[in-house]
Length: 405
Image (cartoon, rainbow, N blue to C red; front, side, top):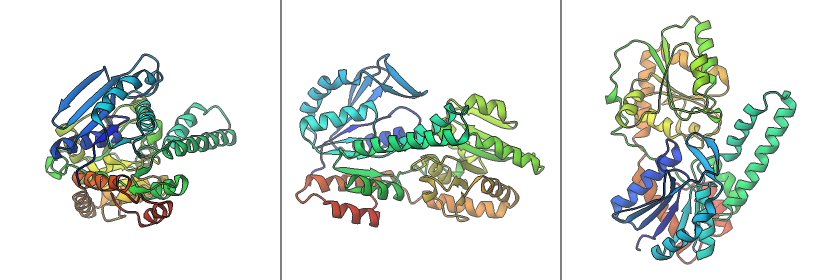
């Protein structure tokens, strides 16, 4: 069967986040394999480009944007692009439209799928409701705990209900971890398949370690924002110092609204900003432990990058990254604050055990491939393009089996 013609509407393409990374890899996969592919994303200005079988359309943002983070915003005037995109889609003649979330780009994709009566596919990348809850919590610190908790709980429930209603527009869904597969299958009644991420194990490798100092380096890579729970690093540092530990240093790579707070509240830390390519790979390889305290991430691409670099990881027991970790095989899953500290103390003290976990982390990462991820997605597309589309009963059984796409 000939590969379907896919119009891909993505929240992010050029930014530094998991959605953008996955989207870039998807575009590159389509180029490598010669598949007809139309990618629509936000950019600094209006632009079109054709590279082989892939056409990219970038839509410049207006001044009427709702800024959510330094590299994340919602264009309130997005509808002005509908007519132009309709002409482009008519010429491209897609077999399906795939959106990555409830951004203004995703909404345009959903509107046009309805207009052209082509199947809509959606992948869940971000727990928007938890994202909103973390932001609201930071804004409501002046309220008493009970009132603040009630308001946050209500806001998260509303945001989740709206997200579910949005994703119910699609005929096929992808989710990055088993918990989300189960939740979406139950709440949308649509076929939902597990969509892992891949990793470049040549770029991210222990062989890039250049460090010669003897400090115990505790690393993090990601957006420095409230939903990443990065203020936990200050608590970790306080505990290390209370235990008499001084031979440590934090290496915190990334940018965001919490960067200034971290600079002011961490005593022994390097914050080099955003790194990419070989510089990022060398930063990972120079870490002795990678700590990812986020409780809202749905997968954790950076966790996989750290593992590929031969670095043991310590993650929260909330969210998607825990599904990448086998405790005391490639890292630790921390149930609460103190287990984060205990894991770091163990890794710092027992170098032999740390090396065994590093080897286990690298072995885990070697089993992840971007090509297998996207080949699986194209296989799942066939379920809505061929006769005999999956029923709601198939959806529920598929969710229980956690079929890997």
